[in-house]
Length: 291
Image (cartoon, rainbow, N blue to C red):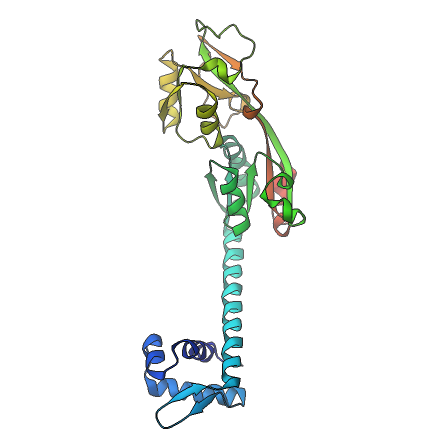
C-alpha cells in the first residue's frame, strides 16, 4: 500500500518540476524528498524519473503515475468530505425554508423525533437559495413553495422527493375603524399607500408585500415581542397568516379592536413542500410521515 505522502510528493513535483521548489512547497529537505521519490519507485517497482547529474524529471511512466496519484488524492478528499457530512448528519440536522412558519412548526417536531440532535434552520428569501443549498449538501432538506418537479431540480427529478407540508394564507390585520375592516377579503392593491409594521426577517413574504403593494411604507422590527407591543399600542396595519393565528408556536396579537381580513392574491396563498434527496429519504422519513 503506497503511503499518501508519497503520492502527494509526486503530484507536487509534477507541478513544480524541480526538487528545490517541490521541497520548499512541501516544507521538507531535498534529501528527504529524494529518499521519498526513491521509495515511491520501489513501491511501484518502476522507474518514474529521468536522472542526470544536476537534474531529475518525470519520464512517461512518471507522468502517468502523477496523473493517477492526483485522482487517488482527489478521491480520498471526496471520501473524507462525505464521511464528515455523514457524521455531521448524525449529530446535526440542517434545513432551510422560504418562509418562517415552516421553521416554527418543524423545530418542535424535529426535537421530538431526534432528541439530542442539534437542529439548525435558516430562513432564505428566494427559492434559488434553498435549492442551491440542497444540491450542494448544505441542507438535509428544504421547505419550498413548489414541489421539486417544478423547481431547478426538475432535470434530475428522479434524485429527489417532495411532499406537501401545509398551506398558508396572508391576512392584513387592521383596526376596527379602518376603511377595510368591514371587507370580507381584499387584494394587495387595495392596501396602496398604507403604512405597515412587520418583522424584518420574513423570507419571501417581505419581497411580495413590497413589490405588490403600491406606494406602501414598511416599519420593520427584528424582535417579534417588540413588534407585538407596537401593533397592540398603535393604529398601524400589520400582517398575520392563518397558520400564525392558530399555532401555539407563534407569538400572536391581541384581537381586541382589530380585524384580520384575508388577502386573495395567489402570491400570498401558498402551499409549502418538504424536499430532500432520495438518498436521504430513509434517514428522514419520519419527518415526511409526521406532516
